[in-house]
Length: 234
Image (tube, rainbow, N blue to C red; front, side, top):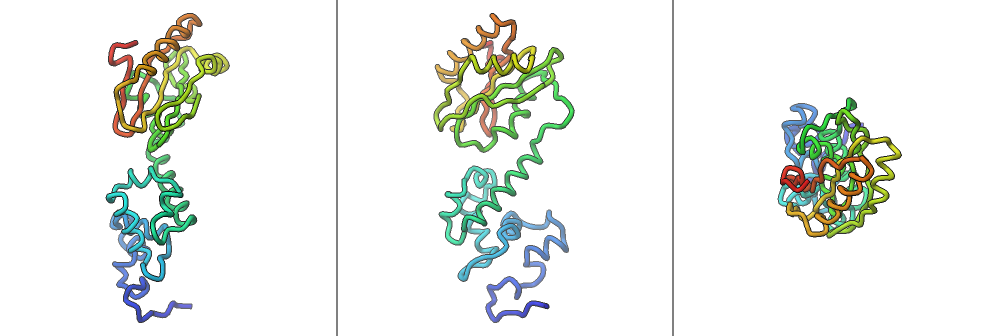
């Protein structure tokens, strides 16, 4: 049954098709829609006071119209915005996560590591937009291809404890030929801390004794990275 028009000009059904997000998407394609219009399609409905488009604009305005900043929010953050309930918040975050995975997913074929940049690219799906520190290792075979990418520990905003014995247990269990250390700095700080330097030296020395060399230690941030090897510290 066709929907009846309302007397309220703010109700989306009363709008011209070019102004309705779903119709615009269907008629003109996804690229024609603004971020707010795409967001309105996701959240589907507004409130008594706001249309879905108005609510989507409010959401985008709250993060300076920056999708990357929106992806850093959690459900609790989003539900603080008037008109955004838990279901809408979950829908938004799920869509952003799918987009991130599609963009940054590692291809099925093995990836060869020939420098620090490929390590950074390989880790983007795992560490992008994280608000807490995590410590990961990349296990490499003799040809320097990635065998596995494995999380070792999860911490808080300012650090994470890493068990050196666990690092090498994982590497030995998977019969790796070498490994690369990676941890993130949610603050965006690219300078290694004293603790970062000490840990790197300890793991490097343990790897030497086990004949399981540590090739590099990468500090990951959303906007770039720091390589111990490139900086002459390994």
